[in-house]
Amino acid sequence: MTNSPDIVCFGEPLIEFNRPKEGDGRTWLQGFGGDSQNVAIAAARQGASAGYLTGVGQDWMGDAFLDLWKSEGVDASRVTRHPSAPTGVSFVTHSAAGHKFDYLRKNSAASLMTPETLAADYIAGAKFFHLSAIGQAISDSARQTCDAAIDAACKAGVKVSYDTNLRLRLWDLDVARKVIDATIARCDVALPSLDDSQQLTGMQEPDAIADYYLTLGAPLVALKMGSEGVLVASGRDRFRLLAHRVEAVDATGAGDTFDGAFLARLLAGDDPQTAARYANVAAALSTMGYGAVAPMPRRAEVLKALSRA
Image (cartoon, rainbow, N blue to C red; front, side):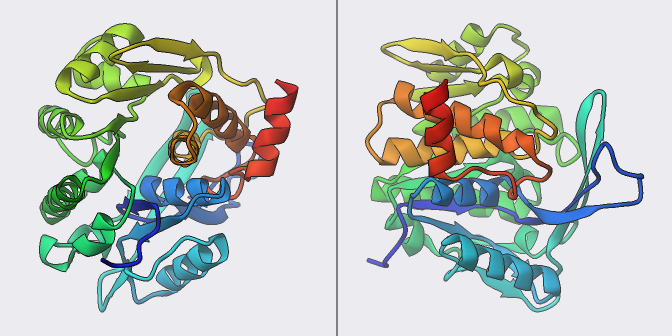
């Protein structure tokens, strides 16, 4: 079996341009995004062994991602480079309503991935396999590749982690509901967010949403509720954690930071409540700077904040 990291993430990386709220409207900070690659970096910054499966272009953006992953200790040995398709791009702007995303991602290298090119052996050697609904929504071939990746993980006994990240500009809500529900039924750790889940389920109450996903078959649900904290539920028990209070400026990537930190701590042997408490603090700290990746805390910073909580 191939030498795989403990956590393998799959999806689409996006070069990020973030316009600060206090700026002149013309200044953009270049960074890195893409929810699944954010999870890989967040996990690596907590000390976990993490790798990424994706496709990037033969462009400066693909080069930048490969340099980033090398510097962060994220294994990219099975990342492919498309000879003509570009790496995707995201733009993040801010208003009183929160942060807003716009994209240049049609026919990106990641969206052209196919089941035939999937490194199934790489997934089979991991302990956790993580993906999100965005990876399923970017194209039909990407959705088929996600299905094949889940098949590979389940066949090998690898635990599947899944974030329901909902982007309605990518697909119809009814299609999203069907695909996301079917994926929840196959995952071991469900990582939905409250606003997405309210649209997907038609329910408003966090406990009802957690019950819905448990009934679908997910053994463990961590419902991320932003400033209201997190609700973690299993068939045996459930608990809520209040949000860790910080001076937040940008919530981009906060949910992804939670995912990566939560998986890293579960992998390290923490029980779900201890892992969630750690991840809750990590996610809060990630909102104190602009961009998805740059403000993500490392383990020492999280432990310092936890000691003061």
